[in-house]
Image 1 (cartoon, rainbow, N blue to C red):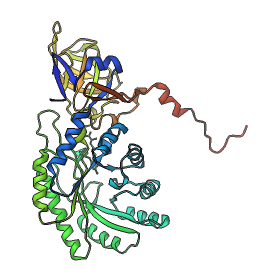
Image 2 (cartoon, helix red, strand yellow; image 1 turned 135 degrees about the vertical axis):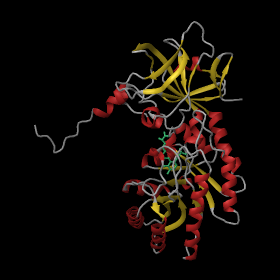
Image 3 (cartoon, rainbow, N blue to C red; image 1 turned 180 degrees about the vertical axis):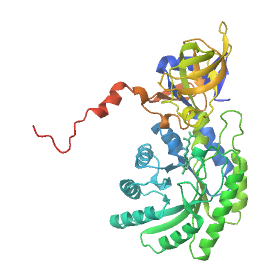
Image 4 (cartoon, rainbow, N blue to C red; image 1 turned 90 degrees about the vertical axis):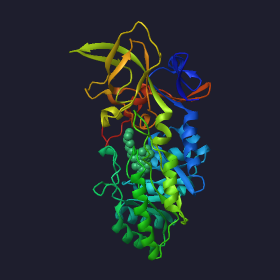
Length: 423
Ligand code: LLP
């Protein structure tokens, strides 16, 4: 059963009618399907059977505690990029031993917290970071497990904002430099080398770039071996693309086969850090049409969601399908609409030129909004963040309540002065 589909002419998420969910929880709301998240995770587990592996979900795609808890309960590990994400994973019941810590700008307090929690490893991105981790581990009397994020200089053929594995990007360390840093780390009593890591970009829809990146990592691993440095794992990052419009989504089975082939006869464990491919198509943004208007021959549908809820179209010109909740609406004129939000910016659009039969009060589903939707949302125009709802069969659960204006204003009611004010 597809988890998102029309039944009797009305759009459903699993067994629930979106009209009922809108009535119960209001709009805009992110609606996720538990079955869909489970299926996406199982797809990886199934494809990688037979190869020692660990799926470390990239928390940045969707960091809702209930979703993290769901993934932890299925055995997922986590890829984090901040102390905040570390705290979320721990609060959600994730096992710190299955956490990898990525990111180019780890702060002292984040490094300390991760060391004390006992994470699986730091994916180190610079010499400066290595020195800092070594110093903090030594102060705390702990050993830091490390892996270097190597920049394999591979073109992932995706949007430039989310290409990360090219030589000129701010991420990772060049292969040659990595060799010297591994040797340096090997001298330290408080650093324990456990692996190697790369992440070449996001929304990659071909297997080729992954294949190329792994080959480059394997070459480096063999050179390290000659120097007496042995690794336990190879982390290939995330970036597996999904279908937003009509592009192919990446075939996880084919990806697994390619990796298995390159890994045959080797003993390192494979780590993957998928974010989008576990969540994007497991969620939608449910929204209501407020007004229709026409300006200069252009038809606009003004909805109650905006770029503060889902910034991907404004930021990357990303495509999200837009579906009406009523499959065959009558007595409505069909038009080509610009689907725009209430925010005071021309860039505030969710979709362009969509043929729809709608009228004010109708509900729409902005598709594929489960990843990089809620986590990238903001309070711009003092709009509260949307509610988040998890559907499991016939049941729905509000997993994040709609933010109120009090929630926003409470942060601004502290009165700390410096230097202290004298009366
Ligand atoms: N690992 C690392 C080190 C990453 O930087 C990322 C994503 C991932 C894993 C997960 O990648 P995924 O499997 O989700 O593609 N906001 C953008 C995507 C930014 C991705 C940043 N890094 C978007 O909405 O398309």
